[in-house]
Length: 161
Length: 293
Image (cartoon, rainbow over all chains, first blue to last red; front, top):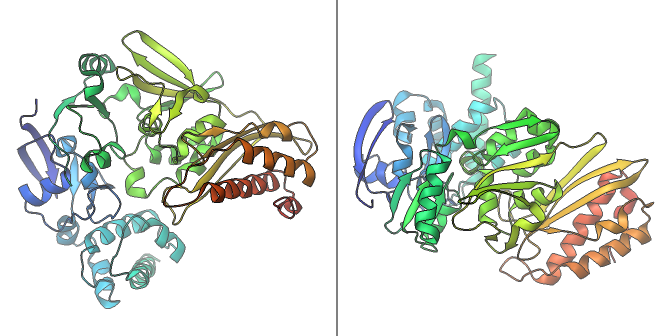
């Protein structure tokens, strides 16, 4: 039973069929098999948040899910959110506010930030910090990241008002 | 690191999962949300030969109330507890506690059954089970067993579950009218492992505790239902009585030393929590002053 297992899933709107070993986690499947390298692998035990992706619409740690567990699921990565234009304004705000330095944490930060903005239209800084508490930036650029998310929230609220 | 190789079986029913476990025993591990198992496997702290994935079993989902009992399926996720109207109405302590569990991306996967079976002494839900007088329901080759939460947790990552058994649900008595609760933990950052925490379910009548269940966590090798509560039940709570209860609490705790805190610091913080809890629940802020000396 350690042999490869057949899985079918939806990744960024495209059907994917593959054979994977049970031990392969979803992050490595996305990176190594599908070459979607925007999902980063940092700590590999669920602490750093760099591998955050959406599964069935909810953010999760892709290093803590087996690829075989994503069978029949809908997975969205940073490439999907980026290409669809869903977070264009958020990405622009990150650039404008210098909210990325080395960029390693940025895909996970964007995933977590967009998740918050979908649930809460105008979060305060404390709520932003709390929602991002599971995402590490080792350049320690947290102030600018919170700034970028706050300004995006305000801009979006302004557009819908 | 990456997990070492293992065989994978997607259980098709509870019966099927039990057959797989009966066959493999302690060579197998049950996978539900994976938020404790996967880190341990990635760090090679454990290397099971077989992973039995129960995450697709619909019969283990759901939160329901019937005849004064709140039943929570083992696969109810942290986020489900947070959003459930039944939990908010009948066990709001749990909803409060869950906001302290890790981070949103973890809470979207982690399950109550997984958290309880994992039995990390620093985790929130086991202590809540003590405070809420929960019954843990497990199934094994010999049928169903119902285990009081106070008997379930037996040590660090150790429970009364045998390797052939599966935790299927927990049952909680619906909180009676006049109930209130308290939850607080000290942690370095929000979502980190608690240094010391306290989950409390209580009934207050005429300014006195008629029931008081104090579930401490991260104070020893398992969650602790503090006997010190006995001092505070059905008695007018004075600063002197509270002081007595605090010294009882310090005596019954056996905290461990780790990189976060010394035993003395944990004892002190547990006393701070109990003081704040009593002052908050009785709405008597003056009790915060003076009792801790």
